[in-house]
Image 1 (tube, rainbow, N blue to C red):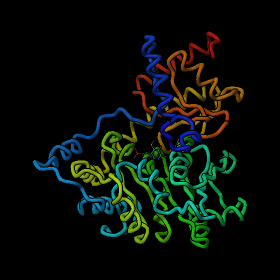
Image 2: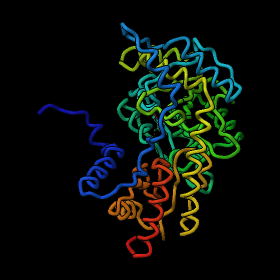
Image 3: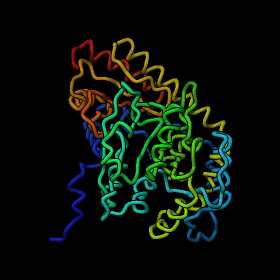
Length: 387
Ligand SMILES: Cc1ncc(COP(=O)(O)O)c(C=O)c1O
């Protein structure tokens, strides 16, 4: 028998695939589906971005470089400067990524030594699954730690076992947080940077929702506190409605970026020049992002009003793309999600985010009208005692 990577036996099927299978099965049965499961927005990409993509398609298309086009890197730095008032060097402190997912997945290949004691990668749960999976495929040891509402879903390594901290190579944070929408306060980020710098732990911040906020204060970037020992991960997927383009970038410490350039030259992750052309237009413009925020805010408000009405507690969702809602009577999240799915409302249970907590996640993805229709259906199901 041809052997396969044993890591595949350590991990469950990728949650997004499970949910899409469920959705296909419901559609095949003729059930109308309200899909709140995936963070894959349906609002059209801004026309200026589409035009920039088309105009960037060359007659002869040659291999793109790992370092990316200078104009792309400059546009990223200009956005970082406008948005966070930080100055980065476009040549040495920024590198394109084919979406944040691959960048996160591949990161440990550059900074983990699978044979060393110091091969733990710390992250909080619930979480985007890729921090764990990238660690496992690179031969590292994932160190997931449960987060909780009590301390604002903040990952606080100073409260954890110091011996294990000494064996930690990388810490991941993700604020605004998928799935809870929590954001990181200034003093927390300051303390975390100092903690990691003192111990020479690589601190990685997945900031792909940093522009998806609905009310003040606007989310901060780790780059406002430090560059040394820090990398931040950015994406156009949600900010600019470009999930299909696969475009993002990594920024931070120039020495770390140089290491990434070296590793990433070994696999095919360079961003295509036409995607970079579209991305330049996207990072240069903030107006389309404001329109997107307004659209998501309206959907959030419809859902929050409904959960208030039926007295289902939820996390505030002042940023991000999701509402993290507590199940009625703290019932099992998977069972509750299955009951909703039977009637065409697809949400993701906490277990799909790595933890058994009584929460479900709703992505602000269906149209405003469909959010209203889904809420009406949910209301009817309650009245008919089907939930
Ligand atoms: C927390 C988090 N990080 C990264 C990503 C991946 O982003 P991208 O589409 O840029 O690969 C997602 C996508 O949902 C996410 O939720």
